Each structure stands twice: as C-alpha cells, then as structure tokens.
Length: 148
Image (cartoon, rainbow, N blue to C red):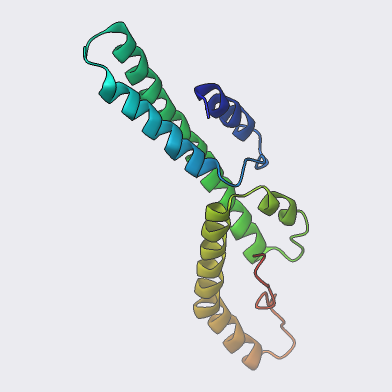
C-alpha cells in the first residue's frame, strides 16, 4: 500500500457507485499506517526533513482513509435504505459485491435496523389500517431477504 493507492481509491469513491477495492483494503491500510509510524519512531532526529516527510504522509494517509470510509459508508447506508424501501432493488447487488467483508457487515446491520424499525413502527400502523379498511393494501416489504 502506498499513499498514491489511497488517493486513487478516494478519486474512485467520488463517483456515485461504490468502486471495487481489495477485500483486505482496511487491513492493508492499517499495515501501511503501522509501517509509517514505525519508520517515524526509528528516526533519531525528530525535526529532520525525513521525519517531517513521514509525519506529513502519515497525516495525509489518515485523512484520506477517513474520507474513503465516510464516502463508502454513506453509499452503504443509501443502499441499505434503498433495499429496505424499494419494491425492486435489482441494481443493488452489484455494489454489494464491491464491499469489503467489514462493509458487508455494516450494510447488513443497517438494513436489519431499518427493517426492524419499519416493522415495529409503520407496519403496526398500516396493519391496523388494513384491518379497518380491507380494500387498502399497504406495501409489505417484510419479504426482503438479506444479501449476505
């Protein structure tokens, strides 16, 4: 992993769809950050040009990976919400394939939370309404299956 790799991923994440990243992306970033921190610790002169350059790269790497995570998390939340409320969420599966295992877990947790909240709030209201008004049929999305 190099800083340029993070910049490339960040550029890809500016697109509306979730880009494909390596399944070990976050562990590779963690290792890259650890290597930078270790390199900085080994420098004897704290204010040397080399130390300043490493600290600068470390700061930028942390900022960039934070931006990547935020952009991807927003997309995950949007996909989970779309799945929970859509009648035909056919185009979502492709982006799920582009998620890391950690991101798939977040996606499933968000989807489960939305579906649970929906079941415990609006569906209880709508089921009462349909009992009183048999001709009214609300959209029932309890048939949604997990993607993972």
